[in-house]
Length: 284
Image (cartoon, rainbow, N blue to C red):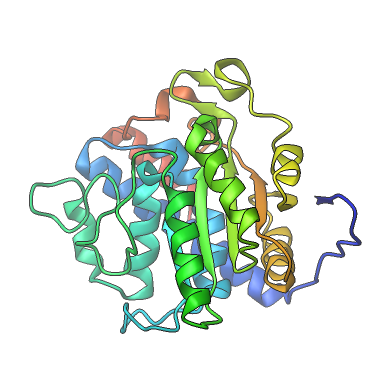
């Protein structure tokens, strides 16, 4: 875990908690794969890379009430990389925002679960999918909460390919200018986008240094290590001077051997045969 200029000492969460999060993430990955295979389309790789981040957020970090999605004192979450919606839907259903049976309706006409998040889905704060917009939306939420004197926090999950968008950096300037310490951005850095490796399409590195130069606190973690993720989210919540970005190094297609780092699964759902193999790998 890396952090420049501060003594960033990781916490040691109970092993029971790590075991619970690990089991939950495995279950959620299965749900993601099943719904994508049923839909016959969607983004598999980027959904699986984000599962451990979302699991950490929704089962330990976020203050939320699934039975009362509009609770005024809730923390807010923005899925800026909207094409990873299946992972968010799996989490929301498991938390109880809506019946799990809806997962089978992903991408169907009239379904509350569309290909990108929209407000027709309980638990979704804002429509997203046009890459680059999520951080700006999160800025507005964070400013609004400050004006309302709420101590709620805002979390926004971005993709690394998305960080090639200019609006991300306009938003990053604004976050720092307004000293939005109640905002945490997370970059799911799986290093692949639809046209190839991000390093070849448009190199965004050194991403942590870029955010720091814009006035952010930047933490770099293994995005599949729950201890590091829990430590980073706690550290971010303690920051009172500026926004925090957690750069989470992840693996596209994480959890299924033939999907990991396989660009083919950026925007393709598994076939029925592939689904069987994947579920067998994930086990019980």
